[in-house]
Image (cartoon, rainbow, N blue to C red; front, top):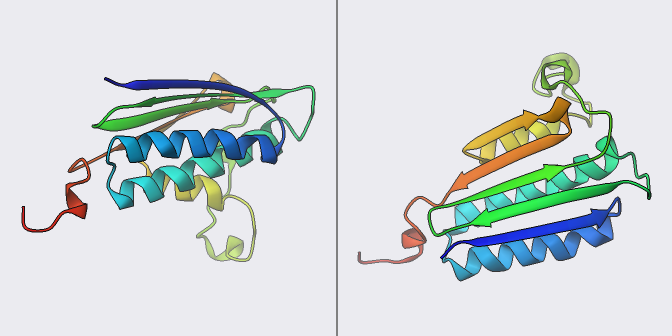
Length: 144
């Protein structure tokens, strides 16, 4: 049986920690491989930070909506803010020589590197992250 978790939080980093903990509990419950847990934790944290900081601009009147579908095979997380949105193609490449010392744009690169799928919609206000649990935790076992 799959888990569906839904959260609505204010634009506050402290509020996001409980959401992250709850989703990570589900990954443990479904025996996710350590590399999948790491990838999801990293991408989830980056996406929520972006929604609060860049999307909602810390506006306490705006909320972040988070929905997570966790199954033994994969996790899908949708995060949506109430900001103005953005166009992914306008974010400078942090690996380009002129941007190597910039502190911006690395979160998107990390999410796109660690997740199997990353999609932006609703004018950039919504991100969909998918990570498959290849091996369903079997990487933890030896002698199989």
